[in-house]
Length: 127
Image (tube, rainbow, N blue to C red):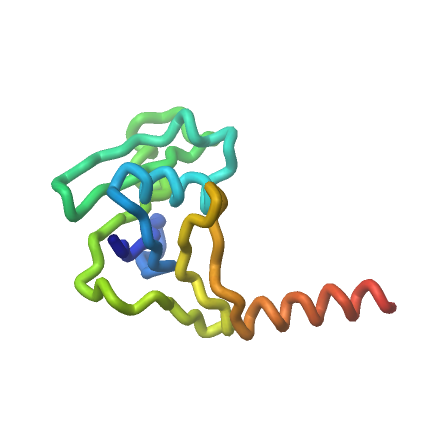
């Protein structure tokens, strides 16, 4: 099944990727593993709305005040995609942020953005 991943912060809401997972539970785990540092996994909160929508919230570790909690957290909206055939999510940077699992590891397609990143790293090593 293909999911659309949206990121909500205090200042912004935008789609950041698409991913393929066998179910919503696996999708939530993939989002945590790809976008969230392991030390914040235990503090994450899942809010399953139904079998097509879930919210994954990562509280801001620097905020102790309950009143400020909601405005400073990071929330991922996870939607079952209306498009279950397109296995791509091209970013303006040239990266393709379509995530899949391969042998238990998250993989993204090779894209122009990755090629540019590799070229830059090679250039830095040669300097």
